[in-house]
Length: 156
Ligand SMILES: [Zn+2]
Image (tube, rainbow, N blue to C red):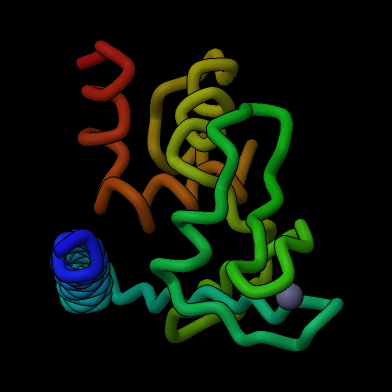
């Protein structure tokens, strides 16, 4: 009797775990789809292409964009992401390109992007692009455009 109950309990826990894993998997897929759609829109309307590159220097795992975003610390001073396999922390990069140029910059998380934008005394997109290209590009990547990013900061 005890045996049966024990098995039942374990079975139930496994089911719960699988459900939770399935739910997490669905959330990751949704996030990946949202990012992919946003990048398509940015390319269509701004003519800018973005690609994130994050290869773990320790175990050489090639992180997906969702893994990079999940690995960020929400700390304005720490721009690294974490490897889901070996937990090594390292800097990921954002490749930005248009018809004229190709640039590689440090990829910032949304919290770091907003923190850096907040520190800029100027609000014209072209000036921000020149003064802090890293924050500008990460803002486009995370928010689609600067207007949305400034709305996040409560600035219209
Ligand atoms: Zn690793």
